[in-house]
Image 1 (cartoon, one colour):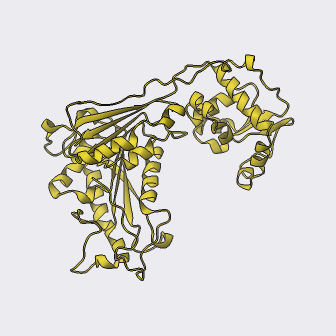
Image 2: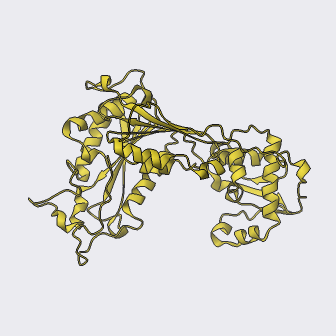
Length: 408
């Protein structure tokens, strides 16, 4: 389903007091959904009704703490899938800046009403601005397929909040002439109606749900009409069953078809700990010996995060300054991986509590890393990477699975 952004001024009359979204509503919504995916720690993500791949292309960018290994998109609109393929395609930048870890993107053509065996076991399903486009018979399949058949750990649904339409005068909300935001919408739920549907699915498929939203009128989150877009995040309350719990007949004979697989190139060289420590040394020495680090440490926002207990002869290097080096990112894969290498690095001193180390390895805010100011620069011959062209790509393929399946 193609997502059509809501105009800020539906009437086209500049005198109307239309809501102002900063940033744009679709940007807020995409960021919020991505944050929910990252918070869930999902490795395999399915975007049902992916359209032209707006969310998928956003999730391609590596996250410092969450490793997404597979992205799946499904849509009934084949033309939209062609755009999704273009938006997720491998670029020259992907070859130049190799990903730390592999990522595979599969695009499926088919209806969400027809479950796909290959997608069973995904960690998270996103359903962004799709549900309001569904006819009743398809809407009835959402719970059985998404929650009963696929059984993801997390299911994220967004849909317009009808109550917010009061701010669009031409929609004539709460009158007999009321219309929807888009001609293809089959309905628009109030917050109460949306919650009623969500809670019925939770009861049937044993999920818990939490609510959120984006696009508040002039940023007022306590406004009585609520947000422009309402969001529900379902979390599975019990382990995944081996058998589907659908409570409805499913048309498995019409399984969605895999049209395209995109494999983004990634850094595949295996290095020992000594080599990774040597690269971290080079980055740390460069930071310590430059005026850049001094400028960084004087920045008020950064200075507020630094420790007051700096060991003698050392300077604190913010974790993100080391993480910002692309070679370090490729070698250590995640920010957690970098922390692990810094903790046992012979030149770094680490300040943080033992309990924090055990329980909060993913939280970089509580760590403080100190590096000797007088540390000698490593010679090129001492650096095992100095004369090695280590940046190689494992795979850089994009190909149609079915060569006879046209895109026109």
